[in-house]
Length: 291
Length: 238
Image (cartoon, rainbow over all chains, first blue to last red; front, side, top):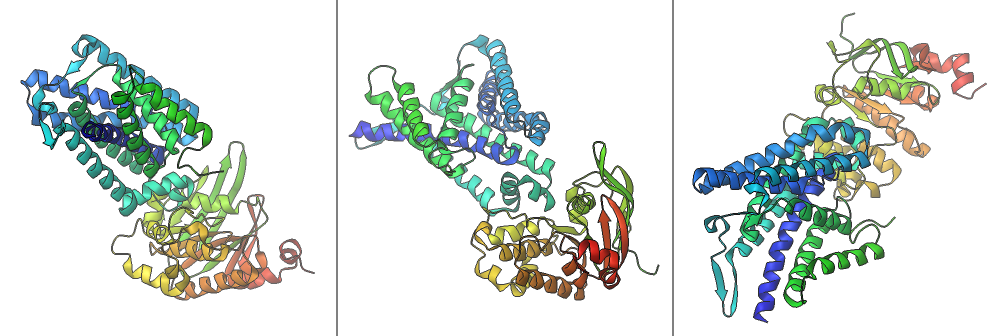
């Protein structure tokens, strides 16, 4: 029972990270109607920037965090002008191709220049993995709790921004009917860049949380995350913010359970198996509109 | 002329590739006027409205708003300068609430839009009752009230209405037009395009008759309504 509860917490922390990934990508669906496949790669590139900062400054953690947040925002905003002409044309397939291309370039860059293509591990001072919390017989890593709390705070803040602020309303209006949004005077360019900037900040936070829960990054991590995030988006319904959150948390727990209780490496099979069943059963996603 | 025109369009041509939907049109809208653009589907009315808004680029000619040349301005700048629009088919953000639609209408409002919100709720109390409902759940007439209210939220100097009577019951058409006349009395200037020429000329001060992108007739609304040619072509009359 104790280990079961500990597994739930691990699952929720993993799910929380997936949730933020899906949230960031859904935000980009809202502002530009694009599936930013390389968003996860930007997260991993940000981790790599953090690793470079630590190795060159003798583990200066505050500086590392600043560098990561800034580079995530810069990298994400830098992709906006690439997507803009495609998004104006409504070229969905080309958008996916472009995003995958960016992802491949980032992966190649990391495997050539970061730690010679090997996994790049972070020091314990950054990951906080040595700190465990014990409640009765239940023991789990403090990093998982911090991750879970951060995910909750960030998700609530983003929801508040989208549903209660003026610019958030403008973003949702663009998502719903771009033509009407423009007629109301919502600036297409500036609002889009703002959306990319916020998604970038989110990518920076995700990268920090990934360091805490995983302890290391690798060139292939971007692809792993990207596939999961896209599948989760489809699973919940494209652009569905709340659905994406719930699905991600749920799949995080499913994954942790499979990892703990199934023999061998069945985690991924269970993850994708559950999703395949849902997609067959509900083609528009678990929370998508029925047409 | 003693007063600057609110809107001055000179020699405007707007083309989609080789086909020009608007050709060398001249048009003036004076302060506190309701001006109607009438003509059949495809006459160029909507294109003209979109060109004023900066949604469609002019090939040649100029558009002047309160003395400023806005021909090449982006839509957001045009709206911020004081032109708002009631789109054809009402342009509801159907999955957003009535209140959110109104708030978005005030996107460029410089100060507190609270008093303006109170004002539109006093014009159309039904919108206040339904403010937390999704706009898509309103009836057609209520949506048109919302679209007009949303256009007023930014306290514009000029409101453009693209086919305001489209798909509305006759009772609502009169209600909407009477409301526009009331707004005019309060100092608003209005340019509307309308296939329902009879209603448009009944309530407007002046009108322009467009056909295949050119102005074929212009003048006071009464005079146009009595013109035998207009009656034959657009009023289905004698």
